[in-house]
Length: 111
Image 1 (cartoon, helix red, strand yellow):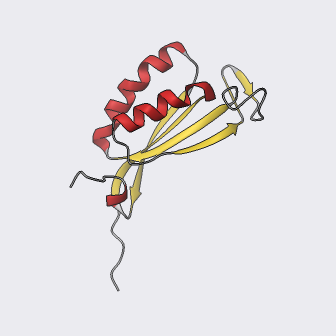
Image 2 (cartoon, helix red, strand yellow; image 1 turned 90 degrees about the horizontal axis):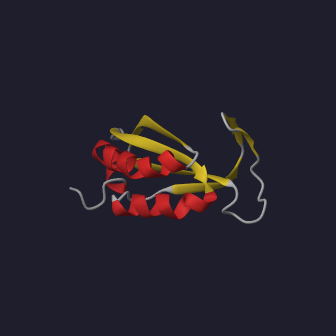
């Protein structure tokens, strides 16, 4: 039986107002992230106070979290693309080291 091999990657979590989801998803598509997950209606407290997760009017008025796992070389283009958004709007971003067992799922077409 062979053991799994882990490959280093970067996980990026982006918390934004729902109205900016298309901007973020377009950016991730442009840098060729192989996928991302969106979690809608998140709640939390930050320096702007508490944000309620329920829908007020529609899904663009609540906060969402978008997360993706990418090779390290894609982090800088994503950060550069998000810079204009965070210069004008509230939000948070976290970049973490992660390891994946199926690297090909996160680097499609790059081998």
